[in-house]
Length: 329
Image (cartoon, rainbow, N blue to C red):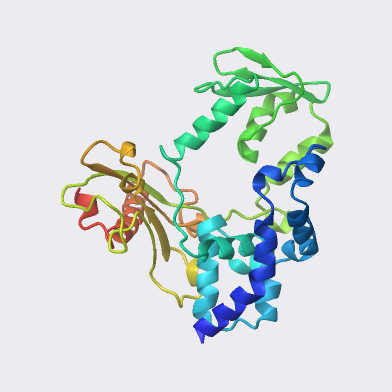
């Protein structure tokens, strides 16, 4: 049965879980200083190295080895992976699965949440950048990446200001936007053809020519609601975060379109995230919304507005599993 299969799997994953959790993330770095930090944890380093190859293998191999057949167990593992990274279990590395299973099922486990919300993480990164002499510029729209002699040398802002790079320009934008930022340099012949071909390959969605098809995407609701009459502390009956699965037995399991919804109400944990007497809510589907459903639609059309209303209704219904009449609040 499901319990027996899952218990056997957890036992099989124990050595990998111990290895995945042995080294603190603070010890992992990509420069030569890694030698100094890793040597502070000799036993942990040995434990990790013993399982090094296995940690990099796909979890699907262990599922086959353990002969996982129970459909609920398979769907449960897929859901856990979706919660973490938006991929099914079979396509996930053992290192990720080992860490996740050990962390989620350790005694007394609780949900960690950053005080001040996710914005506090960005603020901490800004403090770190400034601490070491860097600057963070917000509301600075980048209009163009400047290229000279086959090398990115700076950026030009929408207002015309030019910022020169000392070493390199790192674009954290997606390939479509990065290509657009390089368009003037491409027209001027400042970029080698090999680099142009590579950038073009990243936005090629034609499978017949080796491109990557448009993948499934997300639909979200971000909302503020009235908290009148609602509990002021999280509990099993009124959680701060929950998942709703409409059908465990669909053709694609938890990957079925509009099947699984993840919901959170962080202000129930941290009241500073919402005005007094209010709550903030977030609900979304984890990369299960087919791109084709929305492709080519006019965002000003009635058809598009109706589709948005249908999507919102689906998400609100998941929120209202625990928050009564949420959409009317």
